[in-house]
Length: 121
Image (cartoon, rainbow, N blue to C red; front, side, top):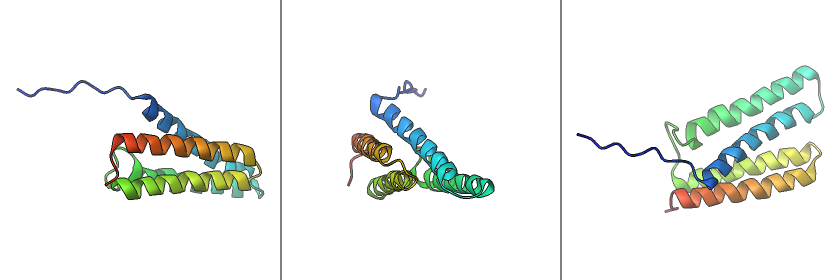
């Protein structure tokens, strides 16, 4: 007879990481829409940003159930880089203060959660 483990409830840091990921998604959509260009160009840019970052990169290498999840150090480095690029794109679109806040908050939450979840060896 096997013993099932009780489902674990997410902690505050895991909820924070989820919210940071949603914020990154919102930033990518905002940047795609806010940058100058034609309507079709902005829609295409938005779709490309979201698909490349979330579907390809995040889903393949960074998601908790990713089929080819990166080891702790490279995974954390890639997460930090993705959030930094998101903040840089947000600043480039003209909203610098929210970009700095986004960068500081998301990086702090993601790094804290990653260090708590699995040690960097």
